[in-house]
Length: 240
Image: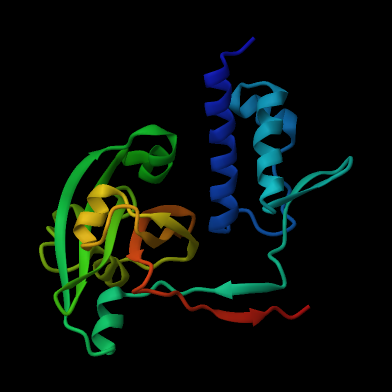
């Protein structure tokens, strides 16, 4: 019988690999994902492990299971919110605010865990950046960002003492696919201190991943005080 922790980690790797291919466009709507027996051979694991990964993708609406046919990439819903990737500096300056960026942490390091390893790719290394965006001298948002050195090797030479990473990436690296998640969080001690708010204060967090032709580029977490920020997306209806 396989070790429980090993089973969980292999299941997570299968789910993560398939999810990445779907979100990057490498697997398109109506494409069939490998059959369970094929995944069992690829990952040298049990049917139970494969079923756990596929079931999670189905529960999230990324795939549909068709009896006696297999599992296929699902079509996106007819209504979808279209979110661009904003340049925080440009947005604030357009609104008449004086923008500033404070770099808190910069480190080139090896990837840790399966999720970071998937982002890092062949190089196996990431650059981790943490900083605070400021508007008119006041904290506007905290940002933690991981960037793949396989996808963006030239970023290793940048010190980001003045230019925010997001602005630099938008100017140097095109992206073909992005995934956004927005949710409420309570400000943790360190982030709360940098944002000059009370620990536990309500905040909005934007988590974003981007890809370039299937290659992961960056994974970023941006935390904004709840009373200072809102997100607006344009809603479009896809034609049948």
